[in-house]
Image (cartoon, one colour):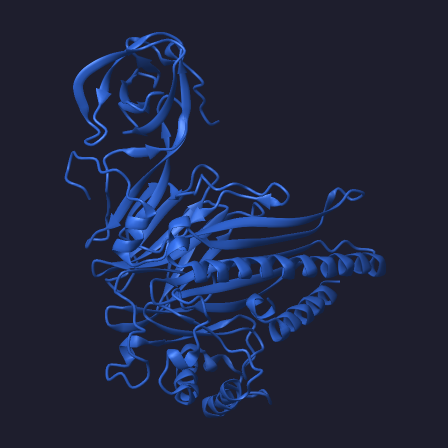
Amino acid sequence: MRKQIARMMAAVLAAVVMTRLPVLAVGSSAAGEKAAPKTEEAAAEESGKLSLRLRNRSIQDWNESLLRYNYIGRYQFIELSDACAAQYPELAEKLRLMNKGQERYLQDSAEGMIEYAGRFDQEHAAALPLTESSSYLVRRADASALSILERYDLYAGGEESTAYYTYCFDPETGKDLELSEIVQDPSALPDLIADRMMAQMDTADQNPEEESARTPEEIRTGLLGELHEYFETPDQVLQWVLDPHGLTFVFNPHTVDVEREDPLFVTILFRDDPDHEIFCDGVAAEKTYAVYLPLSVMNCADLRGSTDLLKVDAVADETEHFRYRGAEITLNGEHYFDSVYCEELTPVLVQAQSVTCLFLFYETGEGGRIRWYSLNQGSPMLVDEMQGTLKLDDDIQLDWEVEDTVPQKVLTDPERMNIRSMVWLLSSYYGWNEYNLNRDGSLSAANPYYWISGNRLTLKKDLKVPLIDENTMEPTGRRVTVTKGTELIMKDSDGETFVDFELPDGRLIRVEVELGEYGEERVDGEDAYDVFDGMLYAG
């Protein structure tokens, strides 16, 4: 049975990889001061980065008789923020069409997959639940290029296959960037790619006694033949992404002249072209960037002035399905383990202030955890960790006709990391702050407080509180009495001693909170539950 499933998976994925085209082809402020959060327009204009968000969606087919899913299809929409879309309308429209095409493709694919699962069940008297997913990894997002890597996964009966697809757009025009706009002479690329392939592949594992074993020279000759066909044949789809530090070519399993079961990423670094003989002028990015890394794939990184090979794997928890016990970091052949039990793992390579860090974003089911390592010393060195995740875009309307989630902001600017954390004061809620990566790899908060969005409490009694200056966000020295029954909107908090609220007339007030020996909260000498209605705590 397992061999039948494996053969089916290989055939299905091979067909997808060889025939599927990109979906578009078918259609710190000073200490003690608090700065108001910058608008997206101002942040984008200052940083030169694009502001993006990802929305997770799903398609499901439920088998009522077996009480399980026949098919689960997961996919993502990628969108510009509203402000960024106004700045780049052609790119916004391009992404809209890409999302529409992606949804249409997976809906058509779902119908075929569900039909196949039914036939398999009848022929083999065994269930074959299928899971198909597509997710986006943003590799570069600035005024010169939006470069996206799409990961496609197919899972059935314990067998899993993965392939990658690439997109690269000109933000100004929304058009696809051509390789000839990146490289001066594309015909020179096959030799460069073949050399880097040979450096990354381990040809020593071949058994020289096997009839199929080939010498490195024979392997390189075979690779060159395949690569020249890619560059010279119009109907061949060459997958590549423009990274901040180089040009990366993506080769899916069984698409080059080597027997590989996993994708191969080959990068030509901008640093390797000091005389500007390969790349066109202006394609190299600034030294401040964030690159989302695919799991279990060797990535080429530009660290310490050398070519470094970096891979991150999610280490499965053998005692519990769909959970991981941490991440394995492989840097130039050396292995390091980061232990965090989680449900999902997102690695991001970040460079700013002459420091390069690997950020590991863990989804733990308890608000998330972030751990990050400096890579400048030649081996991963843990810098710090914090509770939190990347900020969600809470103002977006959801589509309830499909399984839809609140969009999450994409990290594109390391000098403006919007991170949300769980705050426990007069309720539990998410607050967010903006962080900047320092030269030593540490993060510094732009503001001393957490910003809060939308949480509301109602007074059960009159309360005399200090007014807050909306410019300095500090007490004015005046106090006002807020009457019983007034609805207050949470604006910010330090998470320990106070929460600032907005009154119905727009004025700001501060409610000071004292914590007792066992964490009980007191306001104006009374239990907080006797002062406020609507306090809720997670868990």
